[in-house]
Length: 171
Image 1 (cartoon, one colour):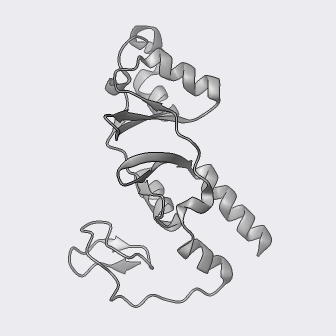
Image 2 (spheres, rainbow, N blue to C red):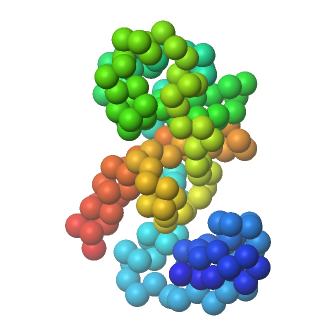
Protein backbone atom coordinates (compact mmCIF):
# COMPACT_ATOMS: atom_id res chain seq x y z
CA UNK A 1 0.00 0.00 0.00
CA UNK A 2 1.06 3.57 -0.69
CA UNK A 3 -0.01 6.22 1.80
CA UNK A 4 -1.04 9.58 0.37
CA UNK A 5 1.09 12.31 1.93
CA UNK A 6 -1.76 14.82 1.54
CA UNK A 7 -4.69 13.04 3.22
CA UNK A 8 -3.14 9.86 4.64
CA UNK A 9 -5.41 7.51 2.61
CA UNK A 10 -3.97 4.06 1.89
CA UNK A 11 -3.89 3.39 -1.86
CA UNK A 12 -2.97 0.37 -3.92
CA UNK A 13 0.57 0.40 -5.19
CA UNK A 14 0.61 1.64 -8.75
CA UNK A 15 -2.27 4.06 -8.25
CA UNK A 16 -1.99 7.21 -10.35
CA UNK A 17 -4.10 9.28 -7.95
CA UNK A 18 -5.22 9.02 -4.34
CA UNK A 19 -8.65 7.39 -3.88
CA UNK A 20 -9.43 9.84 -1.07
CA UNK A 21 -8.34 13.24 -2.35
CA UNK A 22 -7.46 12.58 -6.01
CA UNK A 23 -3.97 14.08 -5.59
CA UNK A 24 -1.39 12.56 -7.96
CA UNK A 25 0.78 9.78 -6.58
CA UNK A 26 3.23 9.79 -9.49
CA UNK A 27 6.09 10.78 -7.21
CA UNK A 28 5.77 7.57 -5.17
CA UNK A 29 8.24 4.81 -5.81
CA UNK A 30 6.34 1.72 -6.85
CA UNK A 31 7.69 -1.74 -6.35
CA UNK A 32 8.30 -3.77 -9.46
CA UNK A 33 6.15 -6.75 -10.32
CA UNK A 34 7.85 -10.04 -9.50
CA UNK A 35 5.96 -11.98 -12.15
CA UNK A 36 3.98 -11.49 -15.33
CA UNK A 37 0.82 -12.21 -13.34
CA UNK A 38 1.60 -9.39 -10.87
CA UNK A 39 2.39 -7.05 -13.73
CA UNK A 40 -0.87 -7.87 -15.52
CA UNK A 41 -3.07 -7.49 -12.45
CA UNK A 42 -1.49 -4.12 -11.67
CA UNK A 43 -1.68 -2.73 -15.21
CA UNK A 44 -4.58 -4.36 -17.07
CA UNK A 45 -7.59 -2.14 -17.62
CA UNK A 46 -11.28 -2.79 -17.02
CA UNK A 47 -11.84 -3.10 -20.76
CA UNK A 48 -9.96 -6.43 -20.66
CA UNK A 49 -12.86 -7.83 -18.59
CA UNK A 50 -15.28 -7.01 -21.43
CA UNK A 51 -17.93 -5.36 -19.24
CA UNK A 52 -21.44 -6.57 -19.95
CA UNK A 53 -24.19 -4.35 -21.28
CA UNK A 54 -25.98 -3.08 -18.19
CA UNK A 55 -29.66 -3.42 -17.51
CA UNK A 56 -30.68 0.20 -17.02
CA UNK A 57 -33.86 1.33 -15.28
CA UNK A 58 -35.28 4.68 -14.23
CA UNK A 59 -35.72 5.52 -10.52
CA UNK A 60 -39.50 5.39 -10.91
CA UNK A 61 -39.53 1.87 -12.38
CA UNK A 62 -41.69 -0.41 -10.21
CA UNK A 63 -39.88 -2.97 -8.04
CA UNK A 64 -41.88 -5.79 -9.68
CA UNK A 65 -40.58 -4.84 -13.12
CA UNK A 66 -36.96 -4.69 -11.98
CA UNK A 67 -37.21 -8.04 -10.19
CA UNK A 68 -38.73 -9.57 -13.35
CA UNK A 69 -35.77 -8.21 -15.36
CA UNK A 70 -33.20 -9.64 -12.93
CA UNK A 71 -34.84 -13.06 -12.85
CA UNK A 72 -35.67 -13.13 -16.57
CA UNK A 73 -32.14 -12.26 -17.64
CA UNK A 74 -30.38 -14.20 -14.85
CA UNK A 75 -28.40 -11.16 -13.77
CA UNK A 76 -27.43 -9.81 -10.38
CA UNK A 77 -28.10 -6.09 -10.70
CA UNK A 78 -29.77 -3.25 -12.54
CA UNK A 79 -28.23 0.19 -12.84
CA UNK A 80 -30.57 3.05 -11.95
CA UNK A 81 -30.05 6.00 -14.28
CA UNK A 82 -31.71 9.41 -14.22
CA UNK A 83 -31.14 11.88 -17.05
CA UNK A 84 -28.13 9.87 -18.25
CA UNK A 85 -26.40 9.75 -14.85
CA UNK A 86 -25.92 6.72 -12.62
CA UNK A 87 -27.89 7.47 -9.45
CA UNK A 88 -28.12 4.00 -7.96
CA UNK A 89 -27.80 0.26 -8.28
CA UNK A 90 -30.32 -2.39 -7.33
CA UNK A 91 -28.77 -5.78 -6.71
CA UNK A 92 -29.76 -9.20 -5.45
CA UNK A 93 -28.57 -8.06 -2.03
CA UNK A 94 -30.93 -5.05 -2.12
CA UNK A 95 -33.79 -7.40 -3.03
CA UNK A 96 -32.99 -9.63 -0.08
CA UNK A 97 -32.20 -6.95 2.48
CA UNK A 98 -34.60 -4.14 1.54
CA UNK A 99 -37.57 -5.81 -0.15
CA UNK A 100 -37.35 -9.32 1.32
CA UNK A 101 -40.72 -10.91 2.09
CA UNK A 102 -42.60 -7.64 1.55
CA UNK A 103 -42.42 -8.07 -2.23
CA UNK A 104 -46.19 -7.93 -2.75
CA UNK A 105 -46.51 -4.79 -0.64
CA UNK A 106 -43.52 -3.18 -2.38
CA UNK A 107 -44.11 -4.45 -5.92
CA UNK A 108 -45.57 -1.24 -7.32
CA UNK A 109 -43.31 1.17 -5.44
CA UNK A 110 -40.42 2.84 -7.31
CA UNK A 111 -37.06 1.11 -7.34
CA UNK A 112 -35.51 4.41 -6.25
CA UNK A 113 -36.79 3.71 -2.74
CA UNK A 114 -34.88 0.42 -2.52
CA UNK A 115 -31.73 0.98 -4.58
CA UNK A 116 -28.28 1.61 -3.17
CA UNK A 117 -27.81 5.31 -3.99
CA UNK A 118 -24.68 6.79 -5.54
CA UNK A 119 -22.80 3.54 -6.15
CA UNK A 120 -19.08 3.43 -6.64
CA UNK A 121 -18.24 3.42 -10.35
CA UNK A 122 -15.08 2.87 -12.30
CA UNK A 123 -13.91 4.38 -15.56
CA UNK A 124 -13.53 1.92 -18.44
CA UNK A 125 -9.80 2.68 -18.56
CA UNK A 126 -9.42 2.17 -14.79
CA UNK A 127 -7.22 -0.64 -13.58
CA UNK A 128 -8.63 -3.99 -12.54
CA UNK A 129 -6.86 -3.65 -9.18
CA UNK A 130 -8.85 -0.47 -8.48
CA UNK A 131 -12.15 -2.25 -9.16
CA UNK A 132 -11.11 -5.14 -6.95
CA UNK A 133 -10.13 -2.71 -4.19
CA UNK A 134 -13.47 -0.87 -4.41
CA UNK A 135 -15.35 -4.16 -4.30
CA UNK A 136 -13.38 -5.42 -1.33
CA UNK A 137 -13.56 -2.25 0.75
CA UNK A 138 -17.21 -1.55 -0.05
CA UNK A 139 -18.43 -5.14 0.00
CA UNK A 140 -19.81 -4.82 -3.55
CA UNK A 141 -20.30 -7.62 -6.04
CA UNK A 142 -21.04 -5.32 -9.00
CA UNK A 143 -19.52 -2.04 -10.17
CA UNK A 144 -20.91 0.11 -12.99
CA UNK A 145 -18.38 1.01 -15.68
CA UNK A 146 -18.61 4.59 -16.90
CA UNK A 147 -16.94 6.86 -19.40
CA UNK A 148 -17.28 10.63 -19.04
CA UNK A 149 -19.97 10.03 -16.40
CA UNK A 150 -22.15 7.89 -18.68
CA UNK A 151 -22.87 4.22 -18.04
CA UNK A 152 -21.14 1.86 -20.46
CA UNK A 153 -21.27 -1.49 -18.74
CA UNK A 154 -21.08 -3.42 -15.52
CA UNK A 155 -18.52 -5.80 -14.08
CA UNK A 156 -18.95 -8.30 -11.30
CA UNK A 157 -16.62 -10.02 -8.91
CA UNK A 158 -17.16 -13.13 -11.04
CA UNK A 159 -15.59 -11.31 -14.02
CA UNK A 160 -12.51 -10.55 -11.94
CA UNK A 161 -12.33 -14.10 -10.56
CA UNK A 162 -12.51 -15.48 -14.11
CA UNK A 163 -9.73 -13.09 -15.13
CA UNK A 164 -7.58 -14.22 -12.20
CA UNK A 165 -8.26 -17.92 -12.84
CA UNK A 166 -7.35 -17.55 -16.53
CA UNK A 167 -4.08 -15.82 -15.64
CA UNK A 168 -3.20 -18.36 -12.96
CA UNK A 169 -3.77 -21.28 -15.35
CA UNK A 170 -1.84 -19.58 -18.15
CA UNK A 171 1.01 -18.57 -15.84
